[in-house]
Image (tube, rainbow, N blue to C red; front, side, top):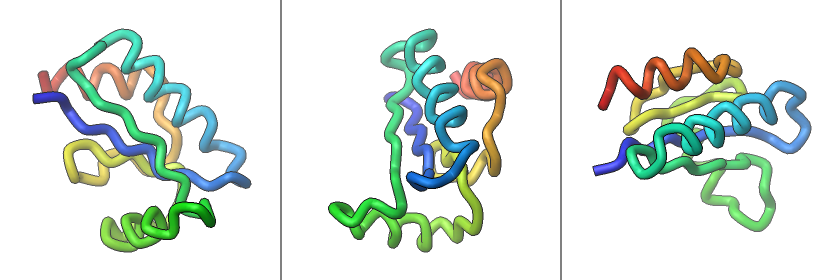
Length: 89
């Protein structure tokens, strides 16, 4: 079963694109071992995204949740994220 990676962000956050990019690059490297989802909590088309952030008690973005656990608050480097994911494989 693939590791679920959720990247919580907002459209105005200056650090969020780096977190999303790190997750996408991790997906490129690790392939089907991980499943990446970008979750914009301020998307008016998806109000359930805000509730998901509340459910995880997310107070800042970017936040990366891995298999249901808040793992990174702030944008990790690509190497940090990949190393953590590889430790879970």
